[in-house]
Image 1 (tube, rainbow, N blue to C red):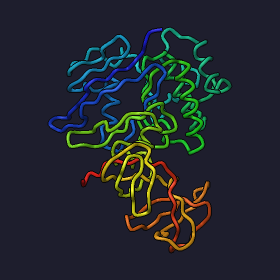
Image 2 (tube, rainbow, N blue to C red; image 1 turned 90 degrees about the vertical axis):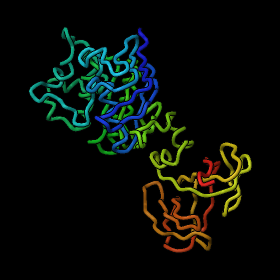
Image 3 (cartoon, rainbow, N blue to C red; image 1 turned 60 degrees about the horizontal axis):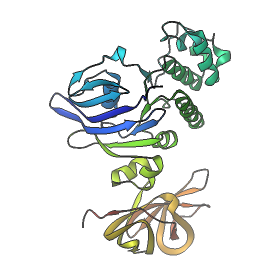
Image 4 (cartoon, one colour; image 1 turned 90 degrees about the horizontal axis):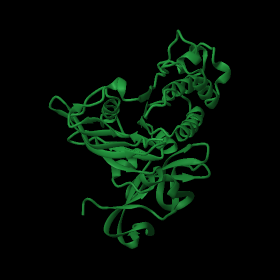
Length: 341
């Protein structure tokens, strides 16, 4: 089996004089799912379109397996020859074809056995002759995924594929997607602005942020890495609720207005300590914090606190009235050097 590895090197693009994507470099291994996470305007769609061949980037190289798809502003392989599968947010199924013919649309020659196999693997074998418009949103998404995988593409691109699904269905679809990609050994890129989809689904996450020269790759790593050890404050806020506490670090601990906190990595000097809500435990009683709001989340209560250091998010197992509260911290904590220092 060929090594269908995607390699992107120094890829950048401009629209006229306006830069939209700073040079980015990364790889995606066979069977790996990379989530590209970022806000609107950070270059996610431009990157997806460049990989699909819908635009030719101004600079850089895209290599897929043994083929260079583009290099330094020159398209070397056109869209139709790239063997790239696309799954859209809107599914884009053909209403005049039944489910089986939708899945087999890109197969030349026809391969009914491949269609049956994929429909069985996505749990839709009994819907082969159904009109896709009669299916639920989750079922249509699985048809779209099977159709994209049917021709055995060298790369799969997914553009906000779970946007129209409810929370429970998003979880099921992400599990099915991971399983199918591992079986097919297909490298895939999931473009999303939803941090839960990215963290739950991906093998690695590429966090993008807007920059003066266009969108830039701020950090790439495992979901745990970008969530627990963000290299920038922007990445921390991109991947979840984040609060910050100033301190003075000395190795694996830091002195703060709330006592000594353990750090997950040694630091020296002024730092900003990342506090995730699950690391801030709030209880009723006299203390240095005040409860500004308290909302039930199902697993407990999300508490907005007012501290001397500013606003901080924490959690509580029980509802809390507005007013004074006691706070404790569950570490170790990630810290970044204080930029002001």
